[in-house]
Image (tube, rainbow, N blue to C red):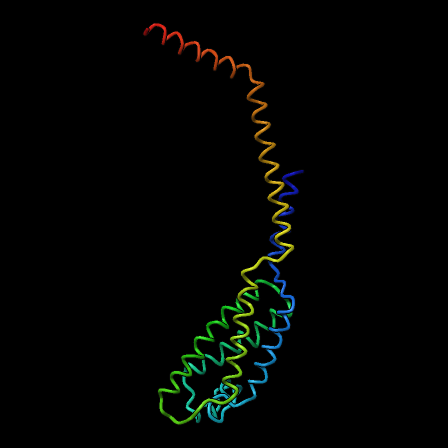
Length: 206
């Protein structure tokens, strides 16, 4: 019965760990996703909007969009536009972690995109959509990070119950082992015989 309870609690702990309790941070992430959606239709590079960069249209080519900017556009779209939205809807750990990982990678490419355009000397600047997308990315990265590191209350409670049961099991096993040892006359006799033999050997040497 105890083993069954331990296994049940282990399954319950695993199930609790598979979800992320976002609380009010869920609305922060939802706002970041909505902010990113607005950025999709704003100028991203030159006169090209973010959706035009995603589609690699002529407008994006005319804006001399760099590879890093294309990568930022696509990776941020996957991380914020898709995965973060799914994480808010499902609150599943298996979706939230990839959302954070992909969005963090997009943040790196956003910085590289700024650096390359500034160093290119093309004279074509970035639009408000670029900075709005970066803002959404930053919000998602720093909002999700503490969520995936912390354990929710249900998981902590189940883990504590499992530790208590395992502790009781170890005490019970130790008590049963001690009882069997005390109730074994052969073991007792053997110990006494060995002690007597050592005493006789010691007496002969003296």
